[in-house]
Amino acid sequence: MTDGQRQIWQVCKGPAAVWLALLVLFSANVASAYLPLGSGNVAVNLCVAAAMVVILATFLMGLRNSTILLRIIALSGLFWTAVMFTLTFNDYLSRHY
Image (cartoon, rainbow, N blue to C red; front, side, top):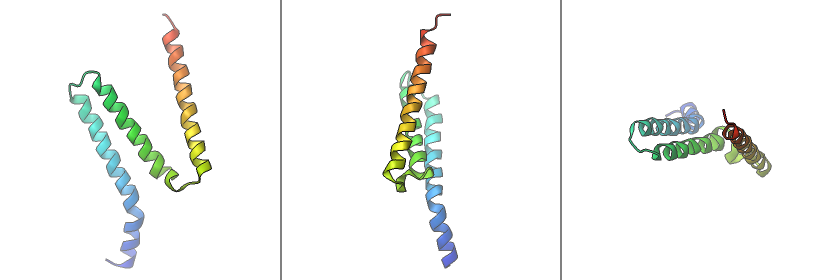
């Protein structure tokens, strides 16, 4: 392996591993849709989605090597997004059509 090939491998192995992990999680999500788990499908799909979000935030958004302030800002964005979804869902549940 030449020095150039070694450098390309060093650059590409991180995104390739993330891509492979996301494909594995996606296939687990699709497989759980065809399994008769009842209400367990929702729990499995939410756990898979949470794992995908953690992988994307950690590696592709660069939070693994970021400063603590950037991590706090990312967590606050996630918190306020959850608040907005909760308020929207609350509005949806409180309407009686």
